[in-house]
Figure 1 (tube, rainbow, N blue to C red):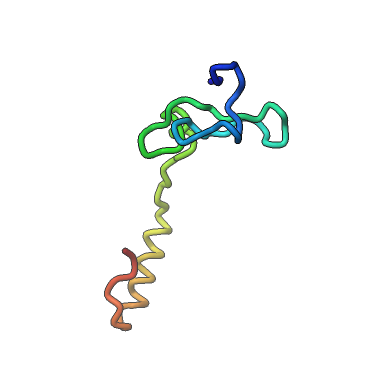
Figure 2 (figure 1 turned 135 degrees about the horizontal axis):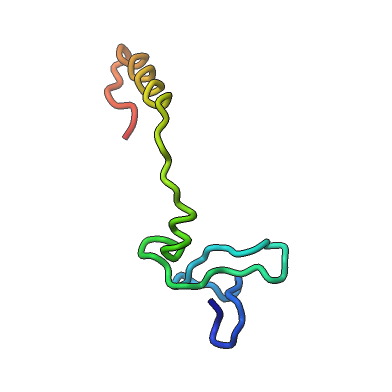
Length: 83
């Protein structure tokens, strides 16, 4: 997307009503931001939100780590480890 004058969205022209997904190398002159309308609650448009935010898949070892931590704390009087 470009501004009305045809210029690309830069650090100086991007605002919170624009997708702030970076495009290109910040060290290069043609670096810019997407500029489309952001998805509600996101700094990015729907397309770039899908690229930037990939859900973390739980590993089986994570579950085992939590079980071990809870077992280790069982006799300490701590009733909640997380949240």
